[in-house]
Image (cartoon, rainbow, N blue to C red; front, side, top):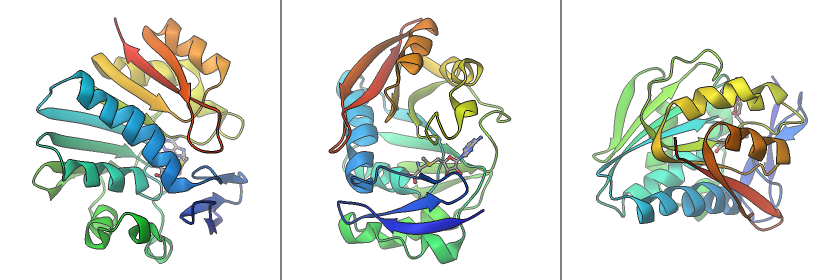
Length: 222
Ligand SMILES: C[S@@+](CC[C@H](N)C(=O)[O-])C[C@H]1O[C@@H](n2cnc3c(N)ncnc32)[C@H](O)[C@@H]1O
């Protein structure tokens, strides 16, 4: 697979999958997008709503590890324990992840390395309150446990990888969520919102990160 490092408008790197001609993050700013969609409107929103001591997060698409790094950074500031499961079909090689410049804006170089060096398909504690389990499996094939509090749905866009957004695949994710669990994604397509509603989520369209009009959050009600 062809992968190239690109620099986005906030100065942070992202990757370009040259076969799909699709970037891993918004070209308007990778770090800005991840903080806005997944941390601010995802994790921080969840923390305001629920006082859970343990929070189980499922990420679809580990990719560069940026969402994991930002979540670990937040974990350092909170008393809650985070159990972070991330699915990835194509782990990026060290020669690429080691060149990513997230440590310039986020810091935590040693932790970023540990996130990538952690073994696949087993659980590892990166911090006493941050447990990582990277799984080298497709979402479609993954045997998902139930009980996720928070979903970071960070698949490639529907026009590039439509199979990730099919209702059966979304249903599998929603079925793995707890009641009152929160689902966030950068995508705000009408079909996605209708599908999430039909699967029992209360769906909100929120302002997107800089350069992107909207994003979506859903809360599981039944
Ligand atoms: C938008 S990128 C993820 C960005 C990532 N969260 C980050 O912070 O860099 C989408 C990711 O999904 C992965 N992917 C592609 N097909 C997948 C599948 N069927 N199941 C799980 N992950 C998949 C890709 O390899 C890619 O890393």
